[in-house]
View 1 (cartoon, rainbow over the protein chains, first blue to last red):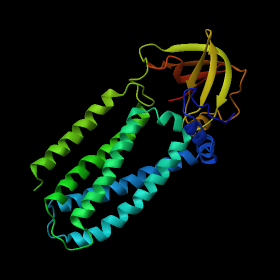
View 2 (view 1 turned 90 degrees about the vertical axis):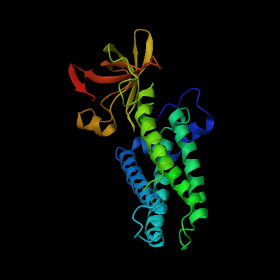
View 3 (view 1 turned 30 degrees about the vertical axis):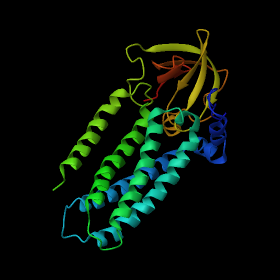
View 4 (view 1 turned 135 degrees about the vertical axis):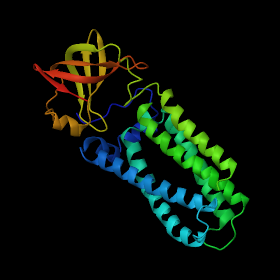
Length: 163
Length: 122
């Protein structure tokens, strides 16, 4: 009665994911899905908020704020929020895995997420945020890309339900 | 303060955010993916009930087709007086809703009529 009927054309692995204990719980519990969904939103709000603030500082806003001090605050916040967003995202995925893998905007979101993660590595290599290295053009380019990528990831995430 | 390249990227992102929703073809939440011009009314026996998140679904046999009917999330079903176990396979049900443009056997129900009682799904 509770079980989801996987789509006939769905790959075996997504059907297996849907029938996992977590997938089953996500669908059958009244409160788990909305709770995890809310947790996902709270996580990416903190994630993107902290990233945007740090990127704007790299681009030269509020020069009185020491980048090192801002990094010590913003980066742990975004790191913890990323863990939360990924964990809740995986849980949401298990509820309807077969549907998600055929959703174009979900695949675009994953691609952009990978690019955003590479860009984080790029910015960290360019800035060395926990040092006092001066901010150069490479770091600013990374910050610009970051400001474009992360909000677009959120937009794609929101659109999954509409496509 | 923000270099021109930054301004251009931000503008591009905002433009993408504005345009992408228009591309929604098989909407789950939005209306554009459903034939909203015509309210489909179907009556027949329920074949299967899936009382689950994110949306409850039933399979309904009517007019020689088994339709997949998307109802409300479990919380709303409970609030509208249709908790788990109310809908059962074999039961006769009338549904009123809109057909999915790209999957013609899926209908998003506006309301269901259960034993003469209309229950709003939206």
